[in-house]
Picture 1 (cartoon, rainbow, N blue to C red):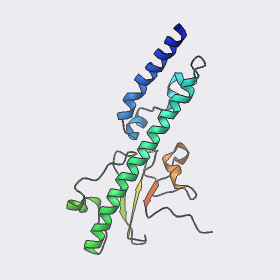
Picture 2: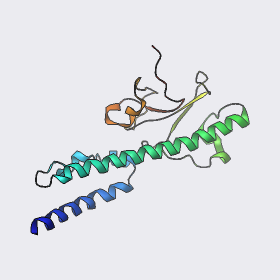
Picture 3: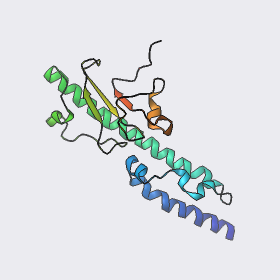
Length: 171
């Protein structure tokens, strides 16, 4: 019985550490340099269930961040396209969306928000992208094989393209 009580207390202490992280943005979690490896319980031999539990929470955080990015980019893209249809050209900057989009939705991966650039060479005359997990604008550098990598640690040094849609390079 004492062992069960110790296990429950241990799991409760982990929940108490992780729950406040759920209210932080991806950028805030990165600024705090928090990853599942930062929790000693993630490597506990005494409590093996936590070695599965803690990484799962961080995967949930990552999935939520991606959902928030998809939501923000969809709302922004719709406003840009509506502006383009009304004005026969894309806006010069996102703030030009004015009444169509009074507040630009935040990018969960960046404190500065989604990155918009007019680009005459682009299919619709602009590009929209996120810094991705590293939080750094890498000058529109993208992984030539997997755009999603920019939202994972493996994608450091690349950006996540929202528009134009990611396209596989032609060989």
